[in-house]
Amino acid sequence: MLLEFEHVTGIPKKFALKDINFSLEAGYICGLAGKNGAGKSTLLDYIMNPRQLYTGEIRLNGVNIRENHTYMKNKLGFVSDENQFLKERTAMQNVELLSRFYENWDMELFKAAMKKMELPVTKTVGKMSRGENFKFQTAFAMAHKSELYLLDEVTAGMDPVFRIDYFKMLQEIIAEEQASILMTSHIQDEISRKTDFVGIMEQGRMIQFGESLEILA
Amino acid sequence: MEMEYKETECKQGLSQEQKMIRKFFKEFLSWNTESIGNWLGAGVAEFFFLLSIGIIPFQEMLEEIAGQAEGSSDALFILIFAVLGWLPAFLYIGPYIAFKEERKDCSITAKLKYLPVDLKEIQKMRVIYVMKFIGKQFLAAFCLQMLAAWFICHEITWMNVVYVICAALLWPAVLVVPVAIWGRRYQ
Image (cartoon, rainbow over all chains, first blue to last red; front, side, top):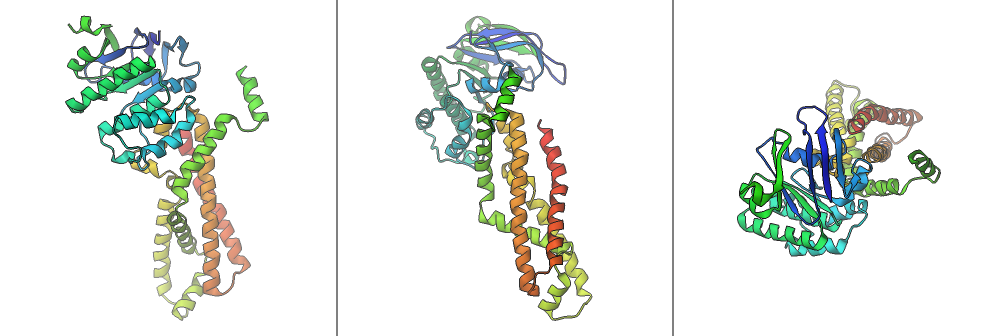
């Protein structure tokens, strides 16, 4: 099992997850659906952010991520508005500065991914559109051989043509790298058609989890 | 086991991760500090600051330039230089100049928290490198001030040197506290 949440409950503060239980195998796309404030982005934050306090366990490939959260981030690819890169620098300059922290960085893979997405590596990050920024972040995540991609409202605001291309790319990533994708989205149509599994969130709880075709039929 | 490993790292000097972080900051800061404009601008701001607090022999400078005896225009000049000296010094010099990105919605810490790197080590290195940067600024300002004193007064007195060194020591004390508090915010 690639990702497992076992009785994960946040330490109460403004908003916390409540008894989240689900698991995801490698090679699948899982969507998290729910209204604004349901806890979708918070769930991703529990995986990425070592400062989140909770009881229960989150495991990646059977290993509790809290055992060595810093090392675990080598395997996590995060694509989000929150994942800021250095805006005054180009994509390549960002990569040259930041890639050193990754164990399995593949520069050729990064260049190939950027080329496939028709995004020049010399483009300044601050001048990229939202869609281009997400493409760059995705290429960055691919280049350090992520096993789990976390996409936070990435497709919101994307035009339909770009969305189709982006999902094609995600399918290729899953097929080639045996990775999995956990993504949040408001778009019900997208969740039902493009994902293999879906978790419905409400007020910090996961009220349903299962195959998309069954849950959203 | 973890304690033994850390002790071994201390004995061997910097760990691999620490070396990597140090190199990261050298490169990151070099983007912001190696611009000649930054150095000159910071040096000029320091010069005006030292001028404003009376370190530079202001009286002699006015007499030399304007050919006047002590006069009422001194107060106005002091005020102008005080404002010019303090404002750019606070705006330009200090931890924010070393992290230009912080002022433009992109916090280096916000970026680094998603990287597979120990945040505490990053914070520690960050403070060290900011202070090193400030030290370089002082050196630039000190040289500029000495040069100005020589040009204007045709001499560098021991008192000038003592005053400048005292001011140079005062600046870190003023800045270290907020930097340390600022750095601890992210720990």
